[in-house]
Length: 326
Image 1 (tube, rainbow, N blue to C red):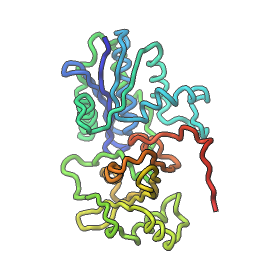
Image 2: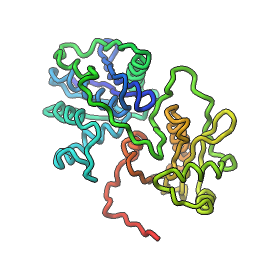
Image 3: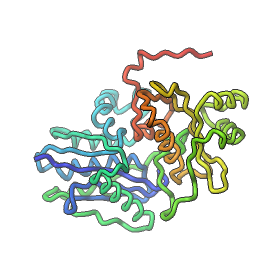
């Protein structure tokens, strides 16, 4: 009989107090975390613990997961990473490599199928796993250790060791560039600040946009005139505080039929870690949804893992693509 479960992770501030959780049913679940970790570490560890706790069953396993980064890491990218000595295509070390190595070992000989589920879409198992992960992160934020749960019946005691923070390497700081910490949850529990997303072009503050982008690695030499022209030729988006001040920006270049290019995504450093980047990207995707655009591209230097959570993947055939620079 196939074991069906969902696994998820959470980090308050990303990095910050972090949690992970997996859920089968009310009598079969587990969670844990650390005082300081990342969202990706939480998601990876949730799958790792689930694999370890079900290893003795010999049963097939179906894992629902809302992170394409996790799914792709295990099912697509890991083979190449191992062949390159746990290095990425650009020669840089694989992030969270110790967890990746444990996942690789835990997958050996297992019949495991992953299914991507859109986060917060009402899927009961995914919602339960999300509550466990977020609850564990909140517990560590409050200086408490969360209830680890009943776990899986008959699991070897060694499986619980994954919940021990000492066994997890100090987390790397996740990319903090154009995404503005997309997956960050509110740093303080309670009601979120009064921020709002808008696709109204008239609300864009061109002075703020140019000032912020001048600090970025990709548009540092862009003049105000060029930026204004780029904005005029694009569909622009913003997030605004209660006073109407712009705190985040993105623009999309598209024919609104078959192709779109997402670019210039940035969040004011002073308000990061409050879920504003997540609000921005989800707002953009929601605005584009009616057009059913089949291909949306972007370019990033080091935020691949964060974008993967929203469905972006590496180019399937990069050798087909060309660029003309002036």
